Figure (cartoon, rainbow, N blue to C red):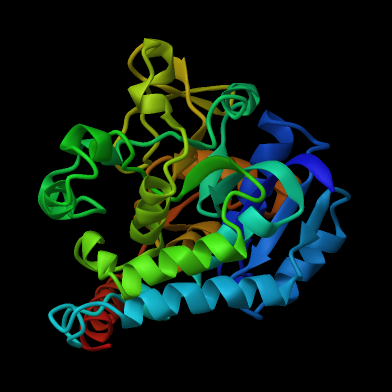
Length: 337
């Protein structure tokens, strides 16, 4: 078992993003750091080929652990109140496998960092590893500033229990696209206890709005009462940066991105609002209006520069129409699930 490593969650659908992430880790963190890919599903032909081509990358294969986390998440969702159980309110995440990222808590690394596959690593993880000496969860995001209505947890309802103040809750709000943690924090017994609180004692109502893996993770980190550190709440201003491709301004210096304000190093850039289809079109030379597209292409084709598109061509009217049509259909399908 390795003392430290990196996890990500992927399948063949996000192959372009996966390759770009792996290359960015190799260049900007280490070429030797062990990486474990958690299978999003069994669509893994391209992923397996990529794993076989890299000396330090493996595929997570403990399906008992994967299934245990799947069942936990789905049982929690099934316990949502009837108000949230209607087809119109049921989130598209309900049938997803994003909760598989939590297998890291029963995985192969004593300490680890998880990256969503639609990310690029931008700097070494020394400060994350250092923080894991004193905290059990490390984050770097701005979820704690969200309005109550869209926060992961129902702050007023939790306050009513007398267990936590709003300040307690807000300081622990976070996303799940990037985090550092440790193996063994959530044992089978702890998850069973948490499931009882969520379902039997109706603490599932603490989870605000539509369910997804990040909302469940927020409940878990709040309720387990272990030390948590978020770089965006650090007293050191150098730690506080942006990370979203479509929201934060960055400066490119030798294909490494820095926070525009103060040129502060960032842990990663997260392309959270773009689909895998957008990236597939981008890699085929279509201009699909992705922020920091050139940076993505640099890392995607780092080992295959001859395959990188020479230029990006505007989408045709037909392609634009199809894109809008597919986006509309996806919204309808999410609403009626």
